[in-house]
Length: 384
Ligand code: F6P
Image (tube, rainbow, N blue to C red; front, side, top):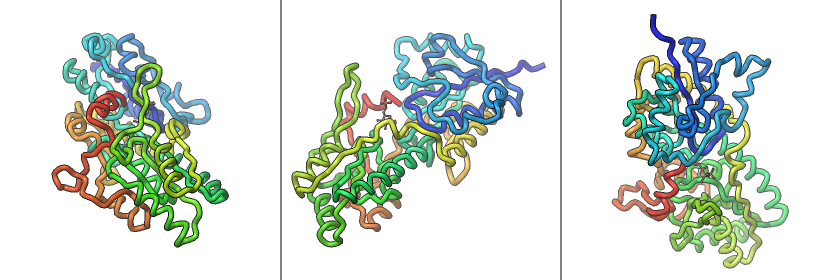
């Protein structure tokens, strides 16, 4: 008789809403359809190093009258966003075997999945990846778990800020996450009624931004304005705004303050800044994130049953596809096309999304600007 399979599951990189929905789907499907044992690995590679795991089963998870995992933000397994295992690679690899795993499902962003894939290759693990990140910059998937919830949260904040902006005739500058890409800023800005959206992929000019705000006031009599800016957007001089925290880590922050100061200096109207920060990563997952999280979890389990490893589940054309993990890393981060549909749509609504230039180096129209200098990008890419 075949030995009962034991699979592991971990969450790695920055958390986001929807991770628990993936965990729930994996546990329910693996236990009820295949009768496998599912082990949750706490704190990703840290759990492997410490040889820690918890048995997850659908009874333990949800037979308490309600099913909290569907609506719960964060991750019940905990996560780390410094998954660099340089120096103790062999120990991490051995953790998989010491825990008796037959396969591992890793829910992570492009950075963490890249690290885990390298470990899997070296250690011969059976790995299946599930993409998550509010930045939505994992290549070869239209959606990553967490993105839609973050857009919904930003939208709620923009709705609130619009009223107070209108009451005081102010410009509200809203700094949102997005280290290298503007997916969050662009999507939320379009649905939240932004007047300007500044993103890492498209250069902008303070002059044109201020012209836009002046025109709103002078031509249309609208005294307030909403400017959404991605944390990874650069200053007009091409500099990123970031600081080093007390632990020496690079943190993007400050571009909103810069934009607000430029607006006040150039137009003489009051501008206020709101940095949404980790609010965007919290809260209950949206219906869409629960849906794709559930679909990803189900298919990840089926891939293990079919012994298809070294792949990531991806959202394409309203269903789940699979992509080799190696391709995902080669092509991440997935930048916004400066000449693409959503940028064009935003512009057609009168939103300022930066200058209409071909910002590719090769003239293809696909930007390879990323808002960070190469050295900074390297640092930031090590996390998440
Ligand atoms: O990758 C997602 C992200 O939310 C980025 O947009 C942001 O810069 C980063 O995580 C913040 O991560 P941390 O949790 O380390 O502050």
